[in-house]
View 1: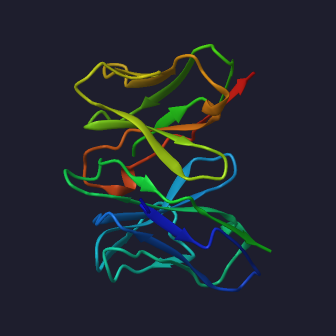
View 2 (view 1 turned 30 degrees about the horizontal axis):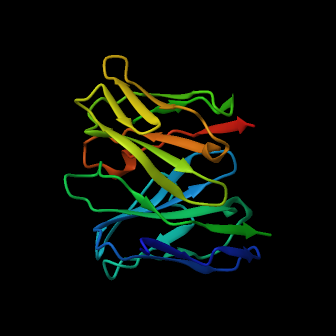
Length: 115
Length: 113
């Protein structure tokens, strides 16, 4: 029962470095999402995708990019890491049947620190 | 946009009942959800309620929905230390607008032995 798998679990970056956070799901879900969760806060939507080849911005997209070449994978790219991007990043997926209010299934998160 | 509000903290003694409350602004949701986040983990779907129901019971969990007041609550009976976690409600509007799948900021439940 893999569900949504995120790698790496932890990472420390220097300011200005780049990296890709990986996300894979094995549930054949059409919809995938990236969120960030700052300490003591709720979730903010960064980007989402409704299917392979289709992505769109969420609430806080600046400083990030995504791609969705297949149904299974939805990587999140940080090009020039900044301290404000220190956060916990969650990937999620949902079936999409019936619209955008189907339950979302979450990965365990990537804890990212920018120093 | 959708606004989902929760109180930030709740502290109870083991064996007591816990009630976590949530208010929302958009009434078009077909489903309303409760998620649980344990330390160091992602959000786990705990339970949900269909919008035409007033109540749903699932073992120790009871979800109450007051659509008129746009109020959702989660009651945990016989609260255990393993229930200590952050609980998020979600009331996604049925508008096919993914920017509006807002989560509340979460209620941190602390269960004292």
